[in-house]
Length: 354
Image 1 (cartoon, one colour):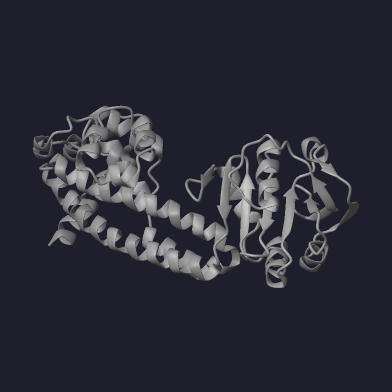
Image 2: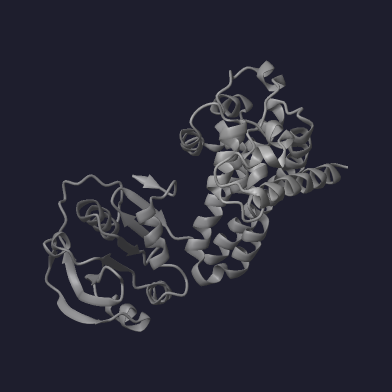
């Protein structure tokens, strides 16, 4: 059973349903405070209904108080798929007892088996340990207190900010080297590595934001301010320098864990170069996607056409407005704009460096 690790999209949706600010979460908190415990199934499909016995039909809107009152009874509560209605209460769950489970308590064993057999989310509230456990399919997740989530998200943001500062410094260096036509693979690897680490931290913080619900407002503001366009910029750099298929490279990088990302050879290989230390000294040339994307209101199709026509940023920078007009979707006015903006971006890069 997957516990507290990478969560599926479906499980993240479940976290949203039980996040602070929802009626369901408020009801769960009341149950915890009262120490009564509880067992709640979300969904009323045929599989679920075939595995319940006894109890009674409620069919009323879900309110925190109603949920907490019904949880005082020994049986399970069945909610509608959208958690807006309480459908049944005091029912007995009868999942297949042959389904393997590592849980010990009767309530949690039933919850685990029910989730595995039906695929529907099941919530178990422990009266002895005062914790809320979510089950869905093979996944299990223990909800953390809001104070713990805030502490973890703050730590993650502090780490992200340190990497962002280092990313910005490496980016300034890369900008200058690109316009001087002196980029080495080490410059590219340095930026991509830091950008990919930031991307991993981003994914972690996003999960905290989902779980925090209404409590995430201040964290989210800080998160967006630190992150900026870092992920998009990193992908543009990869697109500029990758030897192989760009999309496949992104997919490959996304599958790497943090430890692998911190290995320089992994980034070198991902970009399509020999994973040897001497590869870092190779002179490489950007295609020009990233710099062209900084030109305001320049459509993606034009960027692709310009890169495909000239092949490198160096050639694009040398091109005259007349040569630019030979490209599809580039007229006189747009050609002049491209030249002016490229000079502006170049001057800005050189000024930032010094």
